[in-house]
Image 1 (cartoon, rainbow, N blue to C red):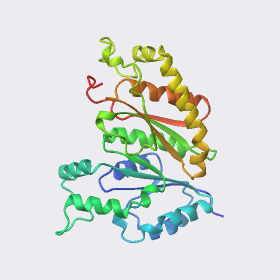
Image 2: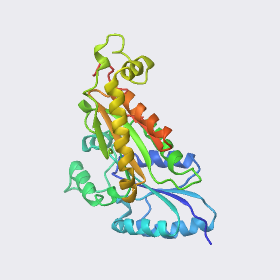
Image 3: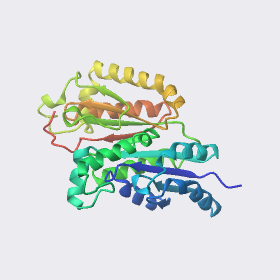
Length: 294
């Protein structure tokens, strides 16, 4: 009988960072396959299982031709075979993808003489719309390559290298509303109503990672009450997301610029839920932008 394997399927828009993710996974001892036609997924798993591989990562996207609409059924089949299957969909804003293609001068896989780059990206979104809902959705628009590598590293640590089955991992993400909503957040909370360290001259050049900012916010009763209220809300509704077969839930915490309040608040929530035994990850999308934003 073949052993159960940890299988990480990566899909997403062309130019969203799948190659970066696969390179990191290869370094983490995953057997990696890029651009696999969907119909070859089951034969690949069977073959690698016979050879004794325990962890594989496979990129399946629009380049593999037809058959991607069968991916949901294939994932169900693999899970029925007792494999630990995780799914990541990498996304980016259209303007970000256009810029990346302009910088690399690569050709979009759907490009043609009759179709512009923007039209090709739009068509790819349509074709991958159903696949995008199969698992965790991450927006790489504002992620540098090193930040994406770190996020993937956190993901596989939380989901791929544990001995007990993991039901759901919480990811807390701070951001600034002035830079746009995160595309990968299932829940978004607005903390702009809380006292703003930006207006304290000594705190303005700092971020929410710095202890003086943390002390300033923790001294405010409203901060702690909102933390407890949101933590209770998330904890209360987690069973519903688990019943919906979610393996990952991203909670976005936004302030104006993503430098102070949202950073501290995401950290506070991450600590509170981790102390209750939940598997969590933490990332700060906009912390490296201009620190004078507020």
